[in-house]
Length: 229
Ligand SMILES: Nc1nc2c(ncn2[C@@H]2O[C@H](COP(=O)(O)OP(=O)(O)OP(=O)(O)O)[C@@H](O)[C@H]2O)c(=O)[nH]1
Ligand SMILES: [Mg+2]
Image (cartoon, protein in one colour):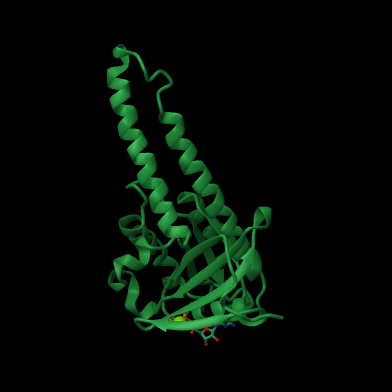
């Protein structure tokens, strides 16, 4: 198998892995890239794990998984880490209540720093880890799912040690990113007035120009987030 990092790709997705200390972020990313091609490098004390996957329509995607350190907690992570990410793996430990209670704070950081055009929230996947430790479990599936529903995000339980549900988790997030981009653009196009050319529609025309600018800005933002030039 060719293990070269210089494969070509259609998209580059930067995904930020966040969550309290000890929830299993590093274990998860290590395990996920272990068996196939992997590349690990470090920047500003943060490990970046890279992996190529093939998504729908045979598109090649380079997943760049940024592993943060939970000890830093939500407040001290560099805001650009949030801003430059097109998706989030938000992990808590099913055996640790406080890591679950932190989820709201992590999401509020995403909402403070990562929204595109001020209101589009990139997809977040809520992950409950250490499903193997069933006798020590503190958070049941229903409670976690309720929290995920409240924020309209997906929820998956995994075991980072053995790799259970890991590929499924990443595939789910990648799918959500594609849908997010499609739906976001559609939302803007739907807002556009149909009649643009007559004088009576001057106001509409103005709105439309503004909207077109917005669309173009959002497109540019997506381009920066997902594709290398
Ligand atoms: N039983 C069990 N233990 C796990 C699992 N995932 C991780 N661990 C253990 O949990 C501990 C913490 O894992 P890490 O991956 O270092 O946690 P982290 O989130 O990267 O922690 P920080 O880097 O401090 O933010 C380690 O001892 C892991 O072996 C799991 O699925 N099951
Ligand atoms: Mg770690």
